[in-house]
Length: 263
Image 1 (tube, rainbow, N blue to C red):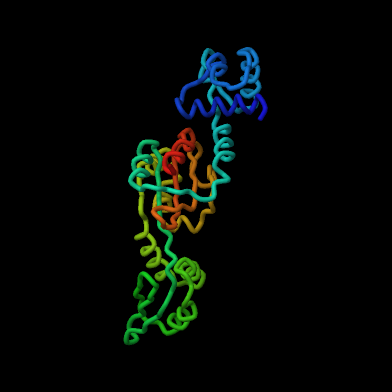
Image 2 (image 1 turned 180 degrees about the vertical axis):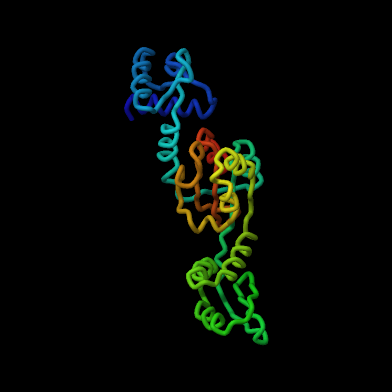
């Protein structure tokens, strides 16, 4: 890693800890390599010209721009595949401490096992762990019998493709019962209040159905308003497979947050 990258990463990491500008003399003391204050100021100018650093006023130190923070989080968090979360109670405490919205859902691998015709009045859709009741329809009965052995997520996806919207809605209700944590929802309302176009998306972020639309990784303006970020990962929680979605301001210290929830 070159001097420029070391200087930038150090500025960002200090900013994430303190949310304060950092000057050349202070930064010099933080660096693990020998660089003079004058050299640091040269890099400050270069990075500011590139739109990576900015000054709140002429006599202050530098802080990273939104562009710099987004790039930092892409590099830092993009390669995570799975999280090991040891304690949901601790997770609940930490999302409050770090000011992060968190949705955690246990995965449901339940398979469709049986379709029961109840006197040509109802269809009992039996999964391994749950069941759903629909009004009787002969065509629907034949079709659903062809899906026996499919997992619940696949049945939900297929139900949309063939227009069985009532079935999809009831499956979503079952899956929402697997939500283990939905915490710090005020972040979503804050987001909607400052970006009115997101008012109609609050329930999207609160519903377990969001997980079928997101791959593991970090998201910015393609999912949330400018100044916010989100990340979605698979997780293991208490020996169960789960999905986790977190949303918050870009300047939150997500590295520290993830370190603490996985220790």
